[in-house]
Image 1 (cartoon, helix red, strand yellow):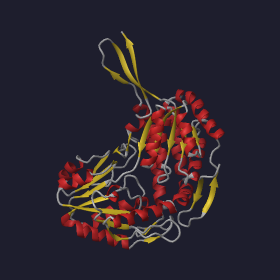
Image 2 (spheres, one colour):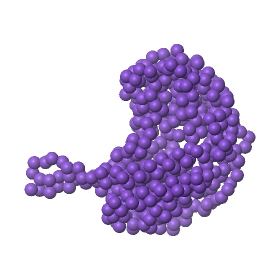
Image 3 (tube, rainbow, N blue to C red):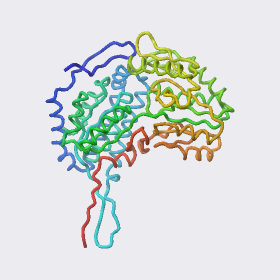
Image 4 (tube, one colour):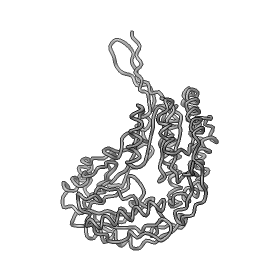
Length: 457
C-alpha cells in the first residue's frame, strides 16, 4: 500500500519524512486493543483516571518547545501560536481531570414510588478523526472528557501531521495510560470505514470538512454509531459602530490571521455598517498590504506563514479567482507563491449575494467584507449561510450588540469579543457546521450511557 502520511514543510515543499499507512492487521489489533482495554479502564476510579490525565497535561507543558517545532514543520503554523495551543490543550486536559467526576455524577429524579437516578457511564471504544489545523487542541478536546469518563480511544490524525500524532501517543504512554487505552493509527480512508463498521467501536468524533463529515456520518449511521461532527464555518463578525475604526479593523484583521486564516470559527465574513464601511475596508487593505511572507519562527504582526500545503494554497487562489469572475472586488492580495504554500493576505468585497463564492468557506488569509445599513440587514445577511458555527457582534452600546447576537443562527454567539475561549466553554455549531458539543460540561455529555437506574420501594 502506498505511503499517505508524510511530514512536508509547507514553506519549502520539502518532504522531510514519510510514514507507511497501517496494515489491515495493525488496524485489527488497534480495534482489539481499544476494546480489550475498556473494561479495566472504565473500572478505575475518577481519581485514578484524573491522575493519568494530569500527568499527560504536564507532559505537554514539559515538551512544548519540541512539539511546537515539530508541528510547525508539518503544517506551517507560527511557533508562538503552537506554544499557546499546547498550553491550552494542557488546560483542557486538567479541566476534565479536575471536574470530570462532578460532570458524571448521578442525577436524582423525583419519583413517587421509588428511587431513580440518571447514571452517566462510559460506552466503550471510540474513534476520533482529527484535522491538521490545531494538531494538539483538537485531540485534547476529544480525548480528555472521554478518557476521564472511562472510554478508550483510537485516534486517526491528519495525513500531514504524523509526527504530532506519534508524539501525542508517546506522551500518553509516558503519562501511564494503560496499553490499549489510547491507540494512534495511520489509517487509510478504507481502514477508517473498517473501524467505524466494527461492532467493537461505539462512537465516532470528526473535526474536518463538510465532505468528510457527511461521509463519516453516513457510515456511522449505517452502523448505528453515535457521531459528533465539527465541520466548516463562515462565521459572521458584525461591526455595528466603533469610536476607533483603525483599532476595530486591526482586531478584525488579527483575528482573521490566526493560524493564517485556517480556523473553522474564524471571522470569515466581516459585516460592517455603511457609515464606517469604506474607512474600515481601507484599514484592512493597508494592513494586508504591509504583510510579508515568513516562516514559523520569524513571525510578527506584519508577516504571514504558508498555508498547510501547496494544494491548499492553490485551492484558495482558485477560489479567489472564481469570486472575481463572479463579480467580486479583490482589493489586495490573493497571490500564489511560485514555491511553497504561500497566498498573500487578501481583502475581498462585493461578492455577489447568491453566487457560489458567497456561500463558500475561504480557508486562509482572506478578509471577506460586506456592507449593511441596519441592524436588521446585518442579522439577515449573517444568517444567510449554510453554516452556523460561531459569530460575533461589536457595538459601543452593549445592549444593542446583545440583541443582534441573540438572533444569530450559530452554536456560539459572542458580544464585543471575537470569540469566548476557555476549557469551560462549549464549542460546536448548527446547520452544516455539524452537531454535538466539545469542551465545557457538555463535552463530557456526548459519548455517554445516560442510564436510568430505578429501585422500586
